[in-house]
Each structure stands twice: as structure tokens, then as C-alpha cells.
Image (cartoon, rainbow, N blue to C red; front, side, top):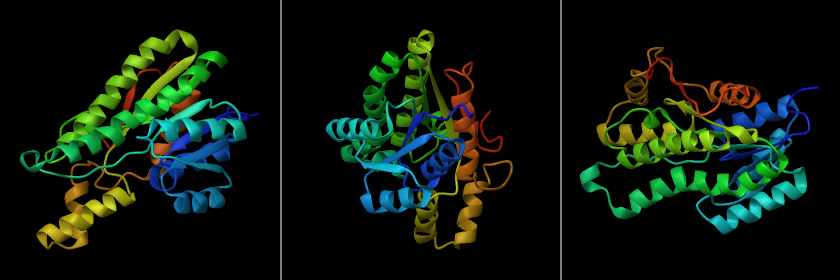
Length: 251
């Protein structure tokens, strides 16, 4: 039997990209899987493709999170593994940033992690164990120009990860983070489109601009992030870590 057999893994932002890759690996390992996101159309399509369950929720809305997580537990049992993957990134020069942008970046990237973690921690404490993995970013480990709100939020995710790892270490719960660099997802695709629109460069040149910070000279693949998440869940000794997945960009 796999360690994952009979366990329930919930993945936010599971309708595409990194979240979908993580959901697939959990499914392949034998876990029951619920993917969560805002778009029912996207979730329904991905859930059908993967053969997993889905719940619709905006992670910045605590009422929606509570309802979705309760429904997921009713369907697949208590949530043993939470992967906080949902997030958003948008580049804005700090001097031109409005308050709404700041609030949005903090809300989805940091407060959303808080909301979802708060929704599962009581059940994990009651059952005597659990795994929480937060998908942060290399922006959680270093600074990047023009994404100050995003960097602040992701640094906050790593801080929260480390604090909770300490707090629950004796309760059978581990809390870790993964910090991918530029990954082959829709978010990076949109970033490339913005570079093209703003500079007139080709898509190839825009991609080269993004990947030049990665010593391997390429985008990270979602499956590489998923493999690290799975490994962290299995290894009980790994706790409070923030692991960069970026080809050596951040060490």
C-alpha cells in the first residue's frame, strides 16, 4: 500500500498549471483528491480529466472556504493534506501601485493561505496529524522589482510556514513551502504577453528574458514542483522548510 492510500488531499488552484500537476500526482499515488478554485467550468473539466472531486470557492472569502472544505470532507473524508497553491501575480511599479492592487495581492497570496489553513487545522489536530504545503515562489526568498506586493505576500507565506511548523511540530503536523521560479504556467504566459505588448519584443525574446535568471536556462515544469510537494508530504522529518525549485537561481 502507498502511504497516500486512504488519505484525502485538497489542492487549491487545482484547475490548471502547478495545482493540476500536484492533484494528478496525489491521484496516481492513491489519495482521494479535491481540487478547489473559483472557476467551476475549469474545475469541472480538470476534475473530469483527472478523475478527482472539486469544490468552487474564492480562497479570499472565508465563508466560501468553510463551505467548500466542509463539503470536500463530507465527500472524501477528513482533509489529511492541504496544498495551498492558489495565487496571483501582477507587475506594477511601486510608485504607481494603488491600494486595491496591494490588497488583492496580499489577499489571494497570503490571507488565502491563512483562510485555508485555518479551515483544516482543527481537523488535523483532532486526527493527530496532517501535512500542509504552501506553494510560495522564489519571490518569497529574494526581491524582484515591480512586484513588491507579490514579494511581500510570498515572504509572508514563508514566515507563516515557519511559525506554524514550530507550533504544530509536536502534534504530528508538518508545514513546509515550495518556492518555484518562473514555471511553465498560464501566469508566466500572461507575463510574456505583457512584455511583448510593452516592449515590442518577440515572444521568444520575452521568454529568454525570463529564463535568463535560471542557471538551467529554462522554465520550471509544473511536474517538478508536484514531485517536491509529494516528497515533502511523505517525509515526516521535513518541517518548516522553504525549498527553492529554480535550477539554482536562489540558494
